[in-house]
Length: 585
Image (cartoon, rainbow, N blue to C red; front, side, top):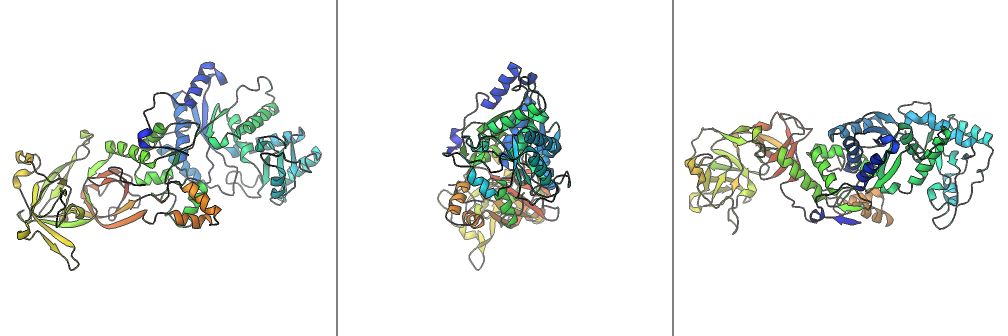
């Protein structure tokens, strides 16, 4: 699989091949100059970022070219479907910034599909088979050898109709009867070798109740649903290339059933395939994601380590950053493994414009400014977002005792260490220049294990930010800080990638080939350091009442957001992404 790196993605200078087809179709007046798309998820899991790529083109191009995009749930398998997934899918689409024209369901067409199947039986184009699934699979043949006909392929129409009715009676045992389309058991496309179009489940449907016990197969439902809805442009991923001829055949048959025999190639959906969104260090399939949730490897579908849209939302990704990333990588006809750093770069670019800057100390050590008056408190000004000065500022308290990051101090400074150390000066952001005490003036305290517990420094009162003395040049860097008496405790969740291997999909398949169960294979690939929960952190009081999912930049640390678990009494923040790419393969 070809890999796209950050340096290889260039600004697009032309439209995608899919968009060009839309332009051509509209110019030629196809489908009466009408454009209609659909986003057709199966409601059997939460959407992941791969679905976002389909959402962006389905909704985006329809809007751009004056068409409409409908949301259609392909709900053909009640064994795995749930209204929880329906609600989550709707929320994800809205969050990404899109809105559907109508909501449809494949189950809306169950009666029409049933009547269509009855017509196919009467036309001699479908039959009921009572072989086992294993027997049917054997008779399919291989890519180099033809299949063999079912012994039930030529049973009389009346018997097929009676058995088909029995399939939906509730008395038929699942797996004993199936309805197959009669096409060609020697066809080079294996999907044409008398595909299954109905099977028995005897399970109530969440929308239709107990009306149906036999349900149409996905390949028999998808294309006809597109046609019945008036879809003009049907877009899907590359694994459906071989399905397209079958999709077209079923639509042609349905047009015949409906009496639309003139210009049968007109006014029909046209399928076009594009590449999936593949990211390194990411496993994307609803089956595998469901396994992670059910086995407790993650806290749920919205665990910020998951690639689901709701997880990215909870972690602090903005919808604009995801859509911008998808626009950068584009749509092609070859599979590529995209570097996760590309997505993180898009997130940084977007959050830099919208995140509120705050001070937070996640690994604190106390700093005492010995010449600052005891009991004195100053209110200093902090800019909310230097990218957007119109967003104003807030105040932050300054006092004698502060918290700073432990990593910002070294008892014995390395040669190029530009932060705080005995005898060194630094600037405290929005405040003063301070100097750590010299070695002979008690610069720090140690505990019994040799850890620094307190640092001592003095401040220059003429160097407050905004004063003339603030321009004094020093060699040290600017550090962030918090007043010990004027900040709030916080929990900070630091996330890294869930998988240790660059291509977990291929590695999972390899380990299973070696005999490991999917769960054991996942355990072997998982990163044991994907989550660190820091409980001894502090943050400005300014954030206490900010709502969940607020975008923040912890100055000098990274981008964070307010977690959905957060309350004013127990503040919780998620690390979204660092200020720069620090991940090493």
